[in-house]
Structures are given as C-alpha cells and as structure tokens.
Image 1 (spheres, rainbow, N blue to C red):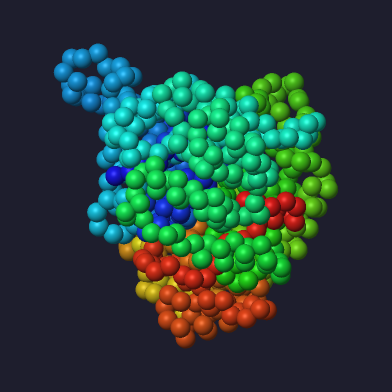
Image 2: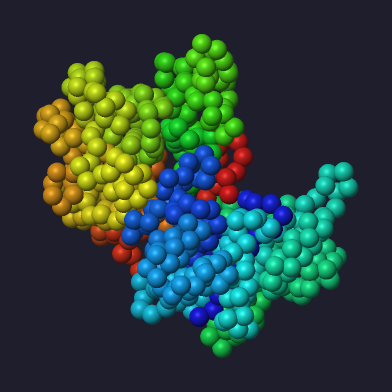
Length: 636
C-alpha cells in the first residue's frame, strides 16, 4: 500500500479537500486504484451534532456514517463508496484507546499520547486503507490521506507525530507528503510572496515531516523565479512545485496537476513507474470546457435557513450542477432565506449565541432589558419583498433538509406557492415534511396541522417522532444510511425517472416521519405516497399527479449524485424547470431504465441517471458547471 498525505499551511480554507480529491483523480487516471481518508482533529466523535454554520453540511454515507463534507468530494471525484471509518477524528481515536484501557488491554501500563494514541492512529490508517471502496475485490493501490486544519494547530499535534512515525514505519517509496500552502500577492507591491510558505514548511519540518511536493495556492500561476526561491528555501525540487491558481471551476484542478506533471512526481516518489500508465483525462477536459461555455440559465430558488453559508448545502448544489449541465443549462441559484418569507419577522435569539451568530442582511438588532439575556432581530420590509421577488422569478424551487423551527413557516409558504402556481418543486427530508403540512393546512383545512418537532402539542400531528428514535441522545440516533424505497405507483414521475425501477436505495438522515395514520386523508385529497419502505408504513416519496413536478422525498438523493451520473430526481427538477421533462421521460422509456437524455437548444446530450448506486461504467457526458449565487460570483 502506498500513502499520499495532504497537509495545509498558512491559513485554512485553501482547498485541501479538492486538492486531495484531484490527486486521487490523477492517480486513478494512471490506472491505479485509490481510496481516501480524512483526518479531523476535533474532539467530536463525528460531524453529526455540528452546526452547518460552523462546519458546513454533514455528509451521510451508505453505512450511516455522519462525516465531514470532504468525504463527499472524495466520493464525487473518485466515484467510490466510503465508510464511516474513512473519517478519523480525535474523539474516535481517544474513545478507542480509553475503551482498550478500561478492558485492560494495556496490561497496567501508563496510557500516554505517545505511543498509545499515535499507535492507534497508525493502526487505524492501515486498517481502513485496506477496505475496498470501488466495488472491486482487494485493497486499493494508493490511499490519499487529508489532515484537516493547519500546520501548527495544537489539536493536530498527535496526528502529525503519528504521521511522522508512520512515514518511517512504511519506509521510503511508500509515503509521499503534499503540502498545500498560500503564496499571496500584496496589493502595495504586486509581487508573489514566498515567506508564508517558507515558514509553514519550516514548521512542518520541525515537527518531523518533510514535504515531497508543494502545491501552492495563488491568484495567478507562480513565476519561475518564485518557484526557484521556494525550492531553495523549502528543499523541494522545482519540478515538484505545482501551482493551484484560481480557476473558473474545480474540474480544472486535476488538469492543472497533470499539465504540471504532478502525476510524474507522485509516481516517482511512490516508485510506481512499473504499474502506472499515461494519465487519461479527456472526460475531465470536456467537463471543464462545457462548464465554462454554458449560456442558457435555469434559476432555482434554494429556500433554506442556512443560506448565509453555501457549504451548508454543498451536496445539494453539486447535485443541481450535475443535473443542470446534463440538461445543457447554466445553473443560477437564488438563495432565499426562509425566515424572510414569513409575515412574522421577529426572531428571538439567546445572547450566548451572539459570538457565533450570522446576522442576515437587512436585519436590525434590538435589545430589550426586560427580557434580559435575549435579543430580537427585526426584519426590514424590503428584505421580505426581495425574498418573495426571488421566489417568484425562479424556474424551480428546492427546499432542502434542516432541523429546528426557525424559518419553517417560510418553507411552508414556498411549498404553497410552488403548488398553487405550478412551479416545479423538490422537497428533501424536511422539504417533504413541510409540503405535507402545507397540504394539510390548505387542502384538508386543518389550520393546526404541524410537526411535533415544531409544536409538540399540536392537535393535528402530520409529522411525528419515529418510535425507534432516542429523545435523550442526539449523536448517531437518527435513521441513518442507505435504505430501500419501493415504488407503489409504477406510473409516477419518480419511478419513471428511475427507469421504471421497482425500488431505489438512497441515504437517509432524519428522526421524524409522516404520520401513517393520516395517510388515507392525504390520499383522498390527491397527495400520492408513491414510495414507501419495506413495511409500507413509512412514507418515502410524495407526488401531486396534477402538477408538472411536485415531488418530496424523505431521503437525501444529493449524496449519491455524481458528475456524469446525476441524481434522477434532481435531473427531473432541472428538466421540469427547463420544460424538458416530457422529452426526458420519453427518452428514458425508449432507451432503457438507466439511460436518459435531455434535449437542449444545442442538441441531445446523453447522461446516466444515477440509480441505486449500482452503476459501474463511467458516462461520457459532462455534469458539472459554474454556480452563480444570485448572478454574482462563481462558486468553485
């Protein structure tokens, strides 16, 4: 087994995850099998209880693991299926060591960071690296390991020490360290500065690790004299210094690595010349080109409560991109903060949350002494109007998952608007539940209809707590991981989009469900529960037959969407928003249950609808592109 470790220096947010994923793509293009591990130095056991505002989305794996969003990047780039053990945290390591100590496995020894914690880290890496993740038998050839955080962070010290020992343990030719660092340009002098990277590498070497390759983040390609200076002071050959400059979309990153012969540097350090072939990245070249040339827009209103931080919905954005490019449309996402849609514009906030609170634009802070310990945020009328203007201008509406009651009424209003005005709608997890609540209120005339999550005392509980859920422990107690959903109505749009399949396997993350006792009432009102679990008691997919595209799902289809293999339901949303849905469904019917084709102004584009995670062949279609937030800026 060969190991590539990716570390970061100077500042966080340099793109270590994308760099690690791109290295994996290049090695895979050389004919090597690749797996990935992400190390997060925080004390949490997993990412399941962390705020999206602080850490971005929680990515869910087939085995129910709630992990860092970077594992989503690995799965999308490399088309693999990882396990919960592919995400190492300080909490997991310390918990495993303490469990062993309690069992008496250390035979009375004093348990210390060195050697017990560092040994546990190394053993974990070696064990997980052997797990096949690409659907083939046997271990991978190369394991790409990303160390989260920045060199010098206190919490990452045990991992750095462990990796230093690990490099000696596996020996030369089996370990390659790639250090991602920043080369800034100061406006006052206008030249690329190498000193931050020099200090970062010096800190890394002082901790026992020496980089084999430098990946330098910068606004523009590095000048040759800058590379020579870095080589001289960091003791890295010029040929092993690559520039990761700003690009129009992230699909260019593997191409940048290949253009600068990073594949040759990796192969040389890992002594894989006998096994590697010339990298073939034609598909990535076509993907990057198409991403840059799309013109016809499709506007999707993203109605959520975490809209101030795009990473909170990263997988949803990627799934939209995969589908929009398959339909030859330039994706434009209009962020609509769901609280802004509500008539009630006053939000109560605990003062202890103030340091981490992100105030939405247009909100005014008001302090009321008689309610000591609380503040009130009042919304400006123009913010309310702007939110509704964005919603009404959208070609399609998407309500993603979430927790808590803030902004729920705004989401319900968005679902009502989509239903009444025949706007294509996709509700995911909570987005499905609020659609059910809206229909109960508006169609069944049950004004008190609600979820027990938001109103435990509601007289009309449309959405209820699942019986098997825990009310005392939050972490790892939801209904998690891949579950099978059976289509009960073969003629429904969801089944047709999945090629008339009888079932679909998708990933879940929820602790509330539609109340099965109210299902007959909803069905009489025209709401069809077209997808259910194996018992027939848990509702998984809803549809309105008299609507162009109104679908809600309890699962998260975004987690299994891939470039070239977009999620079928996201593909349906984009196609319906472009008025291509009928054409798409006809092509699925004629071309077989896994192949679909979208018709665009420039002609037909073949793509694979990602179903059940069982596709093995790579599609030649291109499914990713630029993301524009309200028409301003590019999301890489």
